[in-house]
Image 1: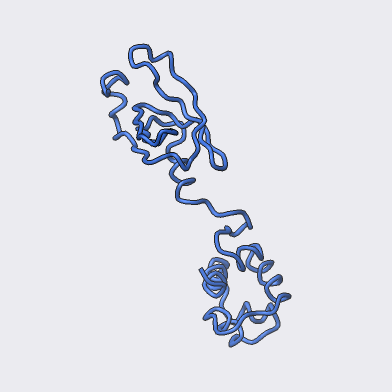
Image 2: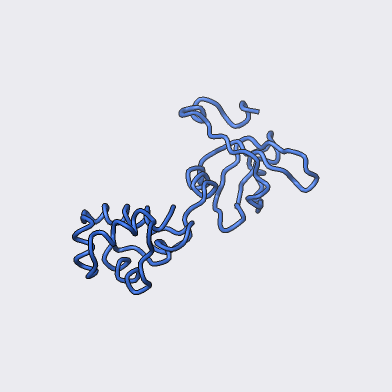
Length: 160
């Protein structure tokens, strides 16, 4: 997203008009309009002041992939893992031999950076023998969520 789009979005979230923002910055409404349309770029001191007024970080305004607080924005993989965390899922990933391995009833316990801490069923006949593995996120091929109520109707052994 461009600086202009981020600026306009942040301004609207604060319920400010272009004229109100311009007044607070000591510039004309036309200057704010040019910034929001990416026809011109504000000076550095104006960016710093805008970030304060709009309650966003300078990094957010100037960089892609950064949230309003200045932290790296969550990737689609991170959002998916947050949804899957603590739930039973079917996980397909590639092991070192490059062969796909499907594990029913995996539970993503935690994830950080490029790794996921996953509990997998090793022995279907002895579910207490589950194993905790550290898996690189790059090795995960698919994550399939169970339908609502499926886990309640069927035991882990019946699904395999």
